[in-house]
Length: 532
Image (tube, rainbow, N blue to C red; front, side, top):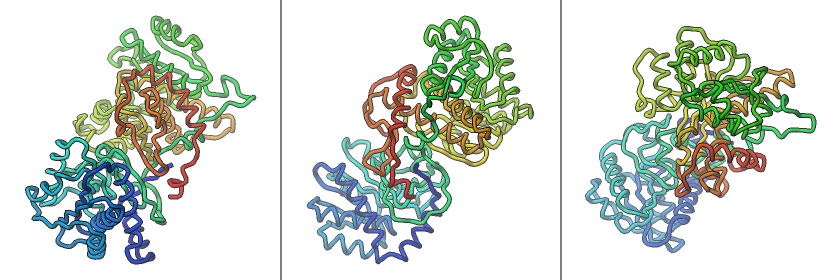
Protein backbone atom coordinates (compact mmCIF):
# COMPACT_ATOMS: atom_id res chain seq x y z
CA UNK A 1 0.00 0.00 0.00
CA UNK A 2 1.22 3.45 -0.87
CA UNK A 3 0.49 6.28 1.52
CA UNK A 4 0.17 9.96 0.70
CA UNK A 5 1.24 12.60 3.21
CA UNK A 6 0.73 16.32 3.45
CA UNK A 7 3.56 18.49 2.19
CA UNK A 8 3.86 20.30 5.54
CA UNK A 9 4.37 17.03 7.41
CA UNK A 10 6.97 15.77 4.97
CA UNK A 11 8.91 19.02 5.11
CA UNK A 12 8.93 19.00 8.92
CA UNK A 13 10.15 15.40 9.06
CA UNK A 14 12.76 16.06 6.36
CA UNK A 15 14.15 18.97 8.37
CA UNK A 16 14.56 16.72 11.40
CA UNK A 17 16.21 13.99 9.32
CA UNK A 18 18.63 16.47 7.71
CA UNK A 19 19.81 17.63 11.14
CA UNK A 20 20.46 14.04 12.19
CA UNK A 21 22.34 13.13 8.99
CA UNK A 22 25.73 14.25 7.78
CA UNK A 23 26.21 17.38 5.68
CA UNK A 24 24.20 17.05 2.43
CA UNK A 25 23.95 13.28 2.89
CA UNK A 26 20.20 13.11 2.29
CA UNK A 27 20.52 15.53 -0.60
CA UNK A 28 23.05 13.23 -2.23
CA UNK A 29 20.75 10.23 -1.72
CA UNK A 30 17.96 12.17 -3.43
CA UNK A 31 20.30 13.29 -6.21
CA UNK A 32 21.36 9.73 -6.94
CA UNK A 33 17.70 8.83 -7.41
CA UNK A 34 17.33 11.71 -9.88
CA UNK A 35 20.48 10.71 -11.72
CA UNK A 36 19.25 7.12 -11.98
CA UNK A 37 15.97 8.26 -13.51
CA UNK A 38 17.84 10.40 -16.04
CA UNK A 39 20.03 7.45 -17.02
CA UNK A 40 16.91 5.35 -17.63
CA UNK A 41 15.57 7.77 -20.26
CA UNK A 42 18.86 9.15 -21.61
CA UNK A 43 19.92 7.88 -25.03
CA UNK A 44 22.27 10.48 -26.50
CA UNK A 45 23.09 14.15 -26.54
CA UNK A 46 23.25 16.50 -23.59
CA UNK A 47 21.44 16.71 -20.26
CA UNK A 48 20.37 20.14 -19.00
CA UNK A 49 19.71 20.74 -15.32
CA UNK A 50 17.36 23.62 -14.61
CA UNK A 51 18.53 24.86 -11.24
CA UNK A 52 16.57 26.98 -8.81
CA UNK A 53 17.40 27.90 -5.25
CA UNK A 54 17.07 25.77 -2.14
CA UNK A 55 17.18 22.01 -1.81
CA UNK A 56 15.58 21.27 -5.19
CA UNK A 57 18.34 23.18 -6.95
CA UNK A 58 20.91 21.38 -4.79
CA UNK A 59 19.46 17.98 -5.71
CA UNK A 60 19.64 18.92 -9.41
CA UNK A 61 23.26 20.09 -9.12
CA UNK A 62 24.43 16.99 -7.27
CA UNK A 63 22.56 14.85 -9.83
CA UNK A 64 24.37 16.74 -12.60
CA UNK A 65 27.68 16.01 -10.90
CA UNK A 66 26.90 12.29 -10.63
CA UNK A 67 25.85 12.10 -14.28
CA UNK A 68 28.97 13.94 -15.42
CA UNK A 69 31.00 11.41 -13.47
CA UNK A 70 29.34 8.69 -15.57
CA UNK A 71 30.52 10.36 -18.78
CA UNK A 72 27.24 12.07 -19.70
CA UNK A 73 27.63 15.70 -20.85
CA UNK A 74 25.65 17.92 -18.51
CA UNK A 75 24.88 21.62 -18.50
CA UNK A 76 23.49 23.39 -15.42
CA UNK A 77 21.29 26.38 -16.19
CA UNK A 78 21.22 28.28 -12.91
CA UNK A 79 18.17 30.53 -12.48
CA UNK A 80 18.66 31.56 -8.87
CA UNK A 81 20.78 34.27 -7.32
CA UNK A 82 21.38 31.95 -4.38
CA UNK A 83 22.05 28.43 -5.65
CA UNK A 84 23.12 25.73 -3.20
CA UNK A 85 26.82 26.57 -2.84
CA UNK A 86 28.23 23.15 -1.94
CA UNK A 87 26.26 21.43 -4.70
CA UNK A 88 27.36 24.09 -7.20
CA UNK A 89 30.99 23.55 -6.21
CA UNK A 90 30.59 19.77 -6.60
CA UNK A 91 29.03 20.21 -10.06
CA UNK A 92 31.88 22.47 -11.22
CA UNK A 93 34.47 20.02 -9.90
CA UNK A 94 32.80 17.16 -11.78
CA UNK A 95 33.02 19.06 -15.07
CA UNK A 96 29.42 20.27 -15.36
CA UNK A 97 29.10 23.33 -17.62
CA UNK A 98 27.62 26.13 -15.49
CA UNK A 99 25.42 28.72 -17.22
CA UNK A 100 23.86 31.66 -15.42
CA UNK A 101 21.72 33.47 -18.00
CA UNK A 102 19.43 36.41 -17.40
CA UNK A 103 16.12 35.27 -15.96
CA UNK A 104 14.15 35.67 -19.16
CA UNK A 105 12.96 32.91 -21.46
CA UNK A 106 14.76 34.42 -24.47
CA UNK A 107 18.09 33.74 -22.77
CA UNK A 108 17.16 30.42 -21.18
CA UNK A 109 15.58 28.55 -24.11
CA UNK A 110 18.61 28.59 -26.44
CA UNK A 111 20.68 26.88 -23.72
CA UNK A 112 18.24 23.95 -23.71
CA UNK A 113 17.84 23.44 -27.46
CA UNK A 114 20.44 20.67 -27.74
CA UNK A 115 19.50 18.85 -24.52
CA UNK A 116 17.55 15.62 -24.84
CA UNK A 117 16.77 15.39 -21.11
CA UNK A 118 15.87 18.25 -18.79
CA UNK A 119 16.17 17.98 -15.02
CA UNK A 120 13.49 20.17 -13.47
CA UNK A 121 15.04 21.45 -10.26
CA UNK A 122 13.51 24.91 -10.36
CA UNK A 123 10.83 24.94 -7.67
CA UNK A 124 10.01 22.35 -5.02
CA UNK A 125 7.51 21.96 -2.21
CA UNK A 126 8.68 25.14 -0.54
CA UNK A 127 6.76 27.26 -3.06
CA UNK A 128 3.07 26.40 -2.80
CA UNK A 129 0.59 28.21 -5.00
CA UNK A 130 1.15 30.08 -8.24
CA UNK A 131 4.71 30.56 -9.43
CA UNK A 132 6.09 34.07 -9.17
CA UNK A 133 7.81 35.97 -11.92
CA UNK A 134 10.18 35.55 -13.60
CA UNK A 135 9.89 31.77 -13.08
CA UNK A 136 6.22 31.73 -14.06
CA UNK A 137 7.00 33.04 -17.55
CA UNK A 138 10.04 30.80 -17.90
CA UNK A 139 8.10 27.65 -16.94
CA UNK A 140 5.28 28.58 -19.33
CA UNK A 141 7.80 29.03 -22.15
CA UNK A 142 9.54 25.76 -21.30
CA UNK A 143 6.27 23.84 -21.43
CA UNK A 144 5.35 25.38 -24.77
CA UNK A 145 8.75 24.68 -26.31
CA UNK A 146 8.89 21.17 -24.94
CA UNK A 147 5.65 20.33 -26.74
CA UNK A 148 7.37 21.26 -29.99
CA UNK A 149 10.42 19.05 -29.37
CA UNK A 150 9.54 15.37 -29.91
CA UNK A 151 11.46 12.97 -27.73
CA UNK A 152 12.43 15.55 -25.11
CA UNK A 153 12.25 13.98 -21.62
CA UNK A 154 11.78 15.80 -18.32
CA UNK A 155 12.80 14.38 -14.95
CA UNK A 156 11.41 16.45 -12.09
CA UNK A 157 12.98 16.72 -8.66
CA UNK A 158 10.37 15.99 -5.97
CA UNK A 159 7.46 17.72 -7.77
CA UNK A 160 7.11 19.29 -11.21
CA UNK A 161 7.66 23.04 -11.01
CA UNK A 162 4.31 24.71 -10.39
CA UNK A 163 2.59 21.67 -8.85
CA UNK A 164 3.50 21.93 -5.16
CA UNK A 165 -0.17 22.05 -4.18
CA UNK A 166 -1.82 20.40 -1.16
CA UNK A 167 -4.86 19.15 -3.08
CA UNK A 168 -3.87 18.44 -6.69
CA UNK A 169 -5.11 21.75 -8.07
CA UNK A 170 -3.08 23.56 -10.73
CA UNK A 171 -2.72 27.22 -9.73
CA UNK A 172 -0.37 28.22 -12.53
CA UNK A 173 1.58 27.01 -15.53
CA UNK A 174 3.58 23.89 -14.79
CA UNK A 175 6.25 21.83 -16.51
CA UNK A 176 5.00 18.34 -17.29
CA UNK A 177 7.31 15.49 -16.28
CA UNK A 178 7.98 12.05 -17.71
CA UNK A 179 9.39 10.94 -14.37
CA UNK A 180 9.03 12.58 -10.98
CA UNK A 181 11.57 11.49 -8.39
CA UNK A 182 9.85 12.34 -5.15
CA UNK A 183 11.66 12.43 -1.83
CA UNK A 184 10.64 10.80 1.43
CA UNK A 185 6.99 10.07 0.65
CA UNK A 186 4.25 10.61 -1.91
CA UNK A 187 2.93 14.16 -2.04
CA UNK A 188 -0.70 15.01 -2.88
CA UNK A 189 0.22 16.36 -6.33
CA UNK A 190 1.58 12.93 -7.27
CA UNK A 191 -1.80 11.21 -6.98
CA UNK A 192 -4.60 13.80 -6.92
CA UNK A 193 -6.00 15.09 -10.21
CA UNK A 194 -5.59 17.21 -12.16
CA UNK A 195 -1.95 17.74 -11.05
CA UNK A 196 -1.18 14.04 -11.25
CA UNK A 197 -1.98 14.09 -14.97
CA UNK A 198 1.14 16.23 -15.49
CA UNK A 199 3.43 13.33 -14.53
CA UNK A 200 3.66 9.93 -16.20
CA UNK A 201 5.69 8.04 -13.61
CA UNK A 202 6.51 8.68 -9.95
CA UNK A 203 9.50 7.14 -8.20
CA UNK A 204 10.12 7.29 -4.50
CA UNK A 205 13.51 7.87 -2.87
CA UNK A 206 13.18 6.56 0.67
CA UNK A 207 14.90 8.95 3.06
CA UNK A 208 13.97 6.95 6.15
CA UNK A 209 11.60 9.62 7.44
CA UNK A 210 9.60 9.00 10.59
CA UNK A 211 6.21 9.96 9.17
CA UNK A 212 2.94 10.55 10.99
CA UNK A 213 -0.70 10.08 9.87
CA UNK A 214 -1.29 9.74 6.16
CA UNK A 215 -3.73 11.81 4.13
CA UNK A 216 -4.68 9.20 1.52
CA UNK A 217 -3.83 5.68 0.40
CA UNK A 218 -3.31 3.85 -2.88
CA UNK A 219 -4.10 0.13 -2.87
CA UNK A 220 -1.82 -2.33 -4.61
CA UNK A 221 -2.51 -5.90 -5.64
CA UNK A 222 -1.46 -7.39 -2.30
CA UNK A 223 -3.91 -5.10 -0.51
CA UNK A 224 -6.71 -6.17 -2.83
CA UNK A 225 -5.83 -9.79 -2.10
CA UNK A 226 -6.60 -9.11 1.56
CA UNK A 227 -10.05 -7.73 0.67
CA UNK A 228 -11.25 -10.42 -1.72
CA UNK A 229 -11.31 -14.05 -0.65
CA UNK A 230 -10.82 -17.46 -2.18
CA UNK A 231 -13.80 -19.75 -1.56
CA UNK A 232 -13.20 -22.64 0.83
CA UNK A 233 -14.65 -26.15 0.75
CA UNK A 234 -17.36 -24.94 3.12
CA UNK A 235 -18.47 -22.03 0.95
CA UNK A 236 -21.51 -21.97 -1.31
CA UNK A 237 -23.31 -19.43 -3.48
CA UNK A 238 -24.93 -17.70 -0.51
CA UNK A 239 -21.82 -17.46 1.65
CA UNK A 240 -19.77 -16.07 -1.24
CA UNK A 241 -22.07 -13.05 -1.50
CA UNK A 242 -25.39 -12.41 -3.20
CA UNK A 243 -25.86 -9.24 -5.28
CA UNK A 244 -29.18 -7.66 -6.17
CA UNK A 245 -29.01 -5.61 -9.36
CA UNK A 246 -31.85 -3.16 -9.90
CA UNK A 247 -30.69 -2.00 -13.29
CA UNK A 248 -31.56 -1.49 -16.95
CA UNK A 249 -34.59 -0.27 -18.85
CA UNK A 250 -36.11 -0.54 -22.29
CA UNK A 251 -34.14 2.59 -23.17
CA UNK A 252 -30.77 1.29 -21.88
CA UNK A 253 -30.93 -2.51 -21.62
CA UNK A 254 -27.20 -3.01 -22.25
CA UNK A 255 -26.29 -1.35 -18.95
CA UNK A 256 -27.95 -4.24 -17.12
CA UNK A 257 -25.85 -6.74 -19.05
CA UNK A 258 -22.63 -4.88 -18.25
CA UNK A 259 -23.47 -4.45 -14.56
CA UNK A 260 -24.23 -8.15 -14.36
CA UNK A 261 -20.94 -9.11 -16.00
CA UNK A 262 -19.12 -6.76 -13.62
CA UNK A 263 -20.59 -8.42 -10.53
CA UNK A 264 -20.01 -11.90 -11.91
CA UNK A 265 -16.41 -11.14 -12.90
CA UNK A 266 -15.31 -10.37 -9.33
CA UNK A 267 -16.66 -13.63 -7.91
CA UNK A 268 -20.17 -12.96 -6.63
CA UNK A 269 -21.84 -16.22 -5.56
CA UNK A 270 -25.23 -15.25 -6.94
CA UNK A 271 -26.75 -12.37 -8.87
CA UNK A 272 -30.42 -11.50 -8.45
CA UNK A 273 -31.72 -9.35 -11.28
CA UNK A 274 -34.62 -6.94 -10.87
CA UNK A 275 -35.57 -5.33 -14.18
CA UNK A 276 -38.19 -5.27 -16.94
CA UNK A 277 -39.01 -8.32 -19.00
CA UNK A 278 -37.21 -7.30 -22.21
CA UNK A 279 -34.02 -6.42 -20.36
CA UNK A 280 -34.21 -9.63 -18.34
CA UNK A 281 -34.28 -11.66 -21.56
CA UNK A 282 -31.22 -9.83 -22.87
CA UNK A 283 -29.26 -10.36 -19.63
CA UNK A 284 -30.12 -14.07 -19.47
CA UNK A 285 -28.80 -14.52 -22.99
CA UNK A 286 -25.44 -13.14 -21.84
CA UNK A 287 -25.45 -14.65 -18.34
CA UNK A 288 -27.83 -17.61 -17.96
CA UNK A 289 -26.68 -18.13 -14.35
CA UNK A 290 -28.48 -14.96 -13.21
CA UNK A 291 -31.46 -15.50 -10.89
CA UNK A 292 -34.56 -13.50 -11.76
CA UNK A 293 -36.35 -14.12 -8.46
CA UNK A 294 -35.74 -11.42 -5.87
CA UNK A 295 -34.72 -12.26 -2.33
CA UNK A 296 -32.09 -11.67 0.32
CA UNK A 297 -28.80 -10.07 -0.78
CA UNK A 298 -25.55 -8.85 0.80
CA UNK A 299 -25.14 -5.87 -1.54
CA UNK A 300 -27.34 -3.97 -3.97
CA UNK A 301 -26.59 -1.89 -7.05
CA UNK A 302 -29.22 0.44 -8.45
CA UNK A 303 -29.32 2.92 -11.32
CA UNK A 304 -27.30 1.51 -14.22
CA UNK A 305 -29.32 2.20 -17.36
CA UNK A 306 -32.36 3.54 -15.47
CA UNK A 307 -34.15 6.77 -16.31
CA UNK A 308 -34.92 8.97 -13.26
CA UNK A 309 -37.40 10.92 -15.38
CA UNK A 310 -39.43 7.74 -15.81
CA UNK A 311 -41.86 7.52 -12.86
CA UNK A 312 -41.62 3.73 -12.65
CA UNK A 313 -37.81 3.75 -12.65
CA UNK A 314 -37.76 6.59 -10.14
CA UNK A 315 -40.08 4.67 -7.82
CA UNK A 316 -37.90 1.55 -8.02
CA UNK A 317 -34.78 3.59 -7.27
CA UNK A 318 -36.35 5.32 -4.27
CA UNK A 319 -37.62 1.98 -2.92
CA UNK A 320 -34.09 0.53 -2.91
CA UNK A 321 -32.68 3.62 -1.21
CA UNK A 322 -35.40 3.65 1.46
CA UNK A 323 -35.21 -0.07 2.20
CA UNK A 324 -31.46 -0.68 1.99
CA UNK A 325 -30.25 -2.90 4.81
CA UNK A 326 -26.93 -3.80 3.19
CA UNK A 327 -24.31 -1.78 1.27
CA UNK A 328 -26.02 -0.01 -1.62
CA UNK A 329 -24.23 1.13 -4.79
CA UNK A 330 -25.99 4.12 -6.38
CA UNK A 331 -24.99 4.73 -9.99
CA UNK A 332 -25.94 6.89 -12.98
CA UNK A 333 -29.51 8.23 -12.90
CA UNK A 334 -30.06 6.98 -9.37
CA UNK A 335 -27.56 9.53 -8.05
CA UNK A 336 -29.88 12.46 -8.76
CA UNK A 337 -32.75 10.66 -7.00
CA UNK A 338 -30.52 9.91 -4.00
CA UNK A 339 -29.38 13.55 -3.93
CA UNK A 340 -32.93 14.84 -3.78
CA UNK A 341 -33.84 12.36 -1.06
CA UNK A 342 -30.72 13.28 0.93
CA UNK A 343 -31.54 16.97 0.67
CA UNK A 344 -35.02 16.34 2.06
CA UNK A 345 -33.68 14.07 4.81
CA UNK A 346 -35.45 10.98 3.47
CA UNK A 347 -32.48 8.67 3.11
CA UNK A 348 -31.66 5.45 4.87
CA UNK A 349 -28.82 5.74 7.38
CA UNK A 350 -27.34 2.52 5.98
CA UNK A 351 -24.07 2.56 4.05
CA UNK A 352 -24.30 3.84 0.49
CA UNK A 353 -21.74 4.19 -2.29
CA UNK A 354 -22.31 6.82 -4.98
CA UNK A 355 -20.36 6.45 -8.24
CA UNK A 356 -20.59 9.76 -10.14
CA UNK A 357 -18.46 11.03 -12.96
CA UNK A 358 -17.67 14.75 -12.93
CA UNK A 359 -20.94 15.77 -14.57
CA UNK A 360 -23.04 13.69 -12.19
CA UNK A 361 -21.07 15.02 -9.22
CA UNK A 362 -21.80 18.58 -10.36
CA UNK A 363 -25.52 17.78 -10.65
CA UNK A 364 -25.57 16.16 -7.20
CA UNK A 365 -23.77 19.08 -5.58
CA UNK A 366 -26.09 21.55 -7.27
CA UNK A 367 -28.92 19.80 -5.43
CA UNK A 368 -27.22 19.23 -2.08
CA UNK A 369 -25.16 22.41 -1.91
CA UNK A 370 -27.95 24.61 -3.26
CA UNK A 371 -25.50 26.39 -5.57
CA UNK A 372 -24.55 26.13 -9.21
CA UNK A 373 -21.90 23.50 -9.97
CA UNK A 374 -20.45 22.60 -13.36
CA UNK A 375 -18.34 19.75 -14.66
CA UNK A 376 -15.44 22.20 -15.12
CA UNK A 377 -15.65 23.32 -11.51
CA UNK A 378 -15.55 19.70 -10.34
CA UNK A 379 -12.54 18.91 -12.52
CA UNK A 380 -10.57 21.86 -11.14
CA UNK A 381 -10.42 20.38 -7.62
CA UNK A 382 -11.78 16.81 -7.59
CA UNK A 383 -10.56 15.84 -4.11
CA UNK A 384 -12.25 18.87 -2.55
CA UNK A 385 -15.44 18.04 -4.43
CA UNK A 386 -15.39 14.37 -3.41
CA UNK A 387 -14.87 15.27 0.25
CA UNK A 388 -17.67 17.83 0.18
CA UNK A 389 -20.05 15.48 -1.58
CA UNK A 390 -19.25 12.69 0.89
CA UNK A 391 -19.99 15.03 3.79
CA UNK A 392 -23.28 16.28 2.37
CA UNK A 393 -24.55 12.89 1.20
CA UNK A 394 -23.34 10.65 4.00
CA UNK A 395 -22.17 8.20 1.32
CA UNK A 396 -18.84 6.88 0.11
CA UNK A 397 -18.12 8.83 -3.07
CA UNK A 398 -16.40 7.19 -6.03
CA UNK A 399 -15.53 10.18 -8.20
CA UNK A 400 -14.63 8.49 -11.46
CA UNK A 401 -11.82 9.66 -13.70
CA UNK A 402 -8.39 8.64 -14.98
CA UNK A 403 -7.46 8.84 -11.30
CA UNK A 404 -10.55 7.73 -9.36
CA UNK A 405 -11.08 9.14 -5.87
CA UNK A 406 -12.80 7.07 -3.19
CA UNK A 407 -13.78 9.17 -0.17
CA UNK A 408 -15.90 8.25 2.85
CA UNK A 409 -17.94 10.66 4.99
CA UNK A 410 -15.58 9.70 7.85
CA UNK A 411 -12.50 10.99 6.05
CA UNK A 412 -11.04 7.80 4.55
CA UNK A 413 -9.43 8.60 1.19
CA UNK A 414 -8.14 6.23 -1.48
CA UNK A 415 -6.87 7.03 -4.98
CA UNK A 416 -6.72 4.39 -7.72
CA UNK A 417 -5.33 5.07 -11.19
CA UNK A 418 -4.68 1.65 -12.69
CA UNK A 419 -6.97 2.03 -15.71
CA UNK A 420 -5.50 3.21 -19.02
CA UNK A 421 -7.12 6.02 -20.96
CA UNK A 422 -8.74 3.38 -23.18
CA UNK A 423 -11.12 2.64 -20.27
CA UNK A 424 -12.98 5.89 -20.92
CA UNK A 425 -15.66 4.19 -22.98
CA UNK A 426 -19.43 3.80 -22.86
CA UNK A 427 -20.57 1.24 -20.30
CA UNK A 428 -17.31 1.16 -18.34
CA UNK A 429 -19.09 2.71 -15.36
CA UNK A 430 -21.82 0.05 -15.46
CA UNK A 431 -19.16 -2.66 -15.21
CA UNK A 432 -17.58 -0.78 -12.31
CA UNK A 433 -20.88 -0.45 -10.41
CA UNK A 434 -21.46 -4.18 -10.74
CA UNK A 435 -17.90 -4.96 -9.68
CA UNK A 436 -18.19 -2.76 -6.59
CA UNK A 437 -21.45 -4.47 -5.62
CA UNK A 438 -19.88 -7.88 -6.20
CA UNK A 439 -16.86 -7.15 -3.99
CA UNK A 440 -19.06 -5.60 -1.28
CA UNK A 441 -21.36 -8.64 -1.28
CA UNK A 442 -18.42 -10.93 -0.60
CA UNK A 443 -17.10 -8.70 2.19
CA UNK A 444 -20.56 -8.31 3.73
CA UNK A 445 -21.12 -12.08 3.61
CA UNK A 446 -17.93 -12.68 5.61
CA UNK A 447 -18.89 -9.99 8.10
CA UNK A 448 -22.33 -11.55 8.59
CA UNK A 449 -20.80 -14.99 9.07
CA UNK A 450 -18.67 -13.58 11.88
CA UNK A 451 -21.65 -11.69 13.31
CA UNK A 452 -19.72 -8.46 12.90
CA UNK A 453 -20.37 -5.05 11.39
CA UNK A 454 -18.86 -3.54 8.25
CA UNK A 455 -17.32 -0.25 9.36
CA UNK A 456 -16.66 2.74 7.13
CA UNK A 457 -12.95 2.06 6.74
CA UNK A 458 -13.59 -1.53 5.63
CA UNK A 459 -16.35 -0.40 3.30
CA UNK A 460 -14.18 2.26 1.66
CA UNK A 461 -11.23 -0.09 1.30
CA UNK A 462 -13.45 -2.71 -0.33
CA UNK A 463 -14.73 -0.14 -2.81
CA UNK A 464 -11.15 0.90 -3.61
CA UNK A 465 -10.29 -2.77 -4.16
CA UNK A 466 -13.12 -3.05 -6.70
CA UNK A 467 -11.85 0.06 -8.49
CA UNK A 468 -8.38 -1.54 -8.60
CA UNK A 469 -9.81 -4.73 -10.11
CA UNK A 470 -11.72 -2.73 -12.73
CA UNK A 471 -8.63 -0.67 -13.60
CA UNK A 472 -6.34 -3.68 -13.89
CA UNK A 473 -8.95 -5.51 -15.99
CA UNK A 474 -9.00 -2.52 -18.36
CA UNK A 475 -5.20 -2.52 -18.39
CA UNK A 476 -5.13 -6.20 -19.33
CA UNK A 477 -7.83 -5.72 -21.97
CA UNK A 478 -5.84 -2.90 -23.57
CA UNK A 479 -2.79 -5.15 -23.86
CA UNK A 480 -0.49 -3.74 -21.18
CA UNK A 481 1.73 -6.34 -19.54
CA UNK A 482 2.38 -4.09 -16.56
CA UNK A 483 -0.96 -5.11 -15.12
CA UNK A 484 -0.61 -3.84 -11.57
CA UNK A 485 0.96 -0.42 -12.15
CA UNK A 486 4.21 -1.19 -10.35
CA UNK A 487 7.50 -0.89 -12.18
CA UNK A 488 10.94 -1.71 -10.80
CA UNK A 489 10.07 -1.73 -7.11
CA UNK A 490 9.02 1.60 -5.65
CA UNK A 491 7.57 3.18 -8.77
CA UNK A 492 4.06 4.26 -9.60
CA UNK A 493 3.08 4.10 -13.26
CA UNK A 494 -0.55 5.22 -13.49
CA UNK A 495 -2.65 3.90 -16.34
CA UNK A 496 -3.09 7.35 -17.86
CA UNK A 497 0.70 7.56 -18.22
CA UNK A 498 0.88 4.48 -20.42
CA UNK A 499 1.45 4.88 -24.13
CA UNK A 500 0.15 2.55 -26.82
CA UNK A 501 -2.25 -0.24 -26.06
CA UNK A 502 -5.38 -0.92 -28.06
CA UNK A 503 -9.04 0.13 -28.10
CA UNK A 504 -11.34 -1.72 -25.73
CA UNK A 505 -15.07 -1.88 -25.00
CA UNK A 506 -16.75 -2.12 -21.61
CA UNK A 507 -17.45 -5.80 -22.23
CA UNK A 508 -13.70 -6.36 -22.66
CA UNK A 509 -13.13 -4.92 -19.20
CA UNK A 510 -15.75 -7.26 -17.74
CA UNK A 511 -14.19 -10.28 -19.45
CA UNK A 512 -10.80 -9.44 -17.92
CA UNK A 513 -12.05 -9.08 -14.33
CA UNK A 514 -11.30 -12.73 -13.43
CA UNK A 515 -7.74 -12.22 -14.68
CA UNK A 516 -7.42 -9.08 -12.56
CA UNK A 517 -8.74 -11.06 -9.57
CA UNK A 518 -6.09 -13.70 -10.22
CA UNK A 519 -3.44 -10.98 -10.45
CA UNK A 520 -4.42 -9.73 -7.00
CA UNK A 521 -4.15 -13.21 -5.55
CA UNK A 522 -0.60 -13.53 -6.96
CA UNK A 523 0.55 -10.15 -5.67
CA UNK A 524 3.14 -9.71 -2.96
CA UNK A 525 3.81 -6.85 -0.58
CA UNK A 526 6.04 -4.11 -1.94
CA UNK A 527 8.52 -3.66 0.89
CA UNK A 528 9.82 -0.33 -0.41
CA UNK A 529 6.38 1.23 -0.02
CA UNK A 530 5.35 -0.72 3.09
CA UNK A 531 8.36 0.71 4.91
CA UNK A 532 6.65 4.11 4.97
